[in-house]
Image (cartoon, rainbow, N blue to C red):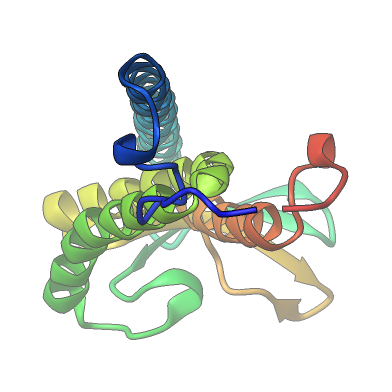
Length: 201
């Protein structure tokens, strides 16, 4: 049995179909294209809302710390585990790259532009990866929150100080946490699949 000629997308070409069937195939392709565009629009709404929500929460918590705790001050919250502090960090998360605020601000701007473009490109190639939008919003919200600090203050306000005995983890903030959680969520959703899909791509 002979095979029908197909297009690059694996769809039978119109030359092998009647005009009515050909029009039906075109209509279906157009419907799928419009449905994908609508789905992506909803995805970007989720990303935008999550980004703004995280950045706002980050800025509010930092403003409260700057208002209530003096610079380099500390307030014990959970004895032996957690202090609220008011530290200015000119580096990135966990005290790395101190004193390079201008460079880090430029890199943050590039990340805020480049990361969404990278995700958009991947989503076009593999629409199922659009589920990683939940993690992307957390990453962008955290990056935006810290960028606002760098542009306004020249440094980032860190205030969560976890410790055990005399060992202290590097102080961090809500934006740092959001970036870490968002990155982990993107990796999980991209490579393990969502629970609703039974862990498959």
